[in-house]
Image (cartoon, rainbow, N blue to C red; front, side, top):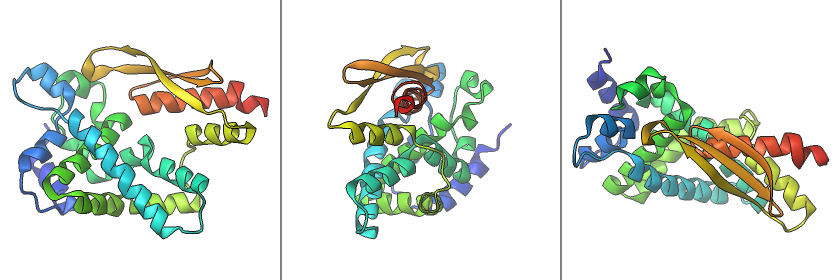
Length: 236
């Protein structure tokens, strides 16, 4: 059985945040499958904090890149940001922190490897940033994000990260004119704590790729990959 208290103490030390309200931390570490199975009224999961943390992360990374790399144009800044805030990058940081071992999670989700699933780990990282923002403010939350992402930033600069298919697709489209690609979630399957998303990517009003994933972001990446390999990219 997991010694959650010990892992939680280690996480608190790694975050180095002087919490005012530890309930926010616990909420950030509560997966929807836990509240779904336990049916505890008034016990909140981390989905709303994830929404908030996503915005905090986007602003912190954008501000850092804008100030640190004045020689880069908008396209390169966008590409760097996409590589930093993508699911694999956030999951990597979350795994380093050991957040999977601290999660309150439903038994069904845990049995299927939920504590190691990249989509869940990435979401928890964003939820933690949302919790820190509410507890400490934007400056502390932003500085925390940049401190934890520092190794990833180095890898981006050295070109050592996995491909970002959405950005690659957008660059190809921009070379062809002003038309933009659009992403749409076509289908959601399964209960709230075990959803699988199907995303589609549209170009000039036509569906040019679909993809499936355990998160919307991953499904969109897979759709962009399909479009690159089979449609738009293959037509270059």
